[in-house]
Structures are given as C-alpha cells and as structure tokens.
Length: 104
Image (cartoon, rainbow, N blue to C red):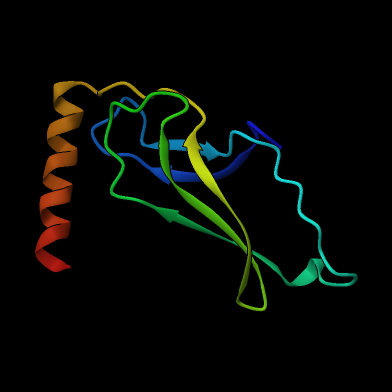
C-alpha cells in the first residue's frame, strides 16, 4: 500500500543512519494462480543516498517480477525527511565513504 515501508536503506551525512523507503501509490498486482510464491521485488537505488532528503523524494525503483519477467515497476520514495547530521557525524561519514572508495 502507498506509504508502507518496503525497504530500509543506509543514508550518508544525515541525522539518522537509515531511511525508510516505500511507494506513493497502491501497488495492486494481478498474479497467475499459484505464482505468489515466485513473486520477487528488486529495489534499485539511483545513487548513494545523502542527506538532506525530503519525504516524497524519488530515490529509485521497485521492480516486481515472476520467473525473471518484469510484471510491474514503481517509483521508490523516501517515507520520511532526513536532515543533515551534525558536523561531527558528517565528518565520520565522509571518512567512511573515503575508506570504502579505496577498497571498491
């Protein structure tokens, strides 16, 4: 349903470490009989999430598929507003991102 949490993702430079993500429309899916167990949801984040992010911002897509065949796709949105963190927390996140970039 619209507004329900579907995923929780890491956010950098924010007052919180994670952000709740969902869709802004009801996602009614018509599935063939007996295929519910094969339904798969893939979450695709457009880019690294960095604060500030406002509630309702589109951050990616959620793709629903059965047996690797895409049956529906919806915008993935932020379900909450995340403000920038303190200067200290932003510095820590900057160092973490720098460290990650060295080894990826």
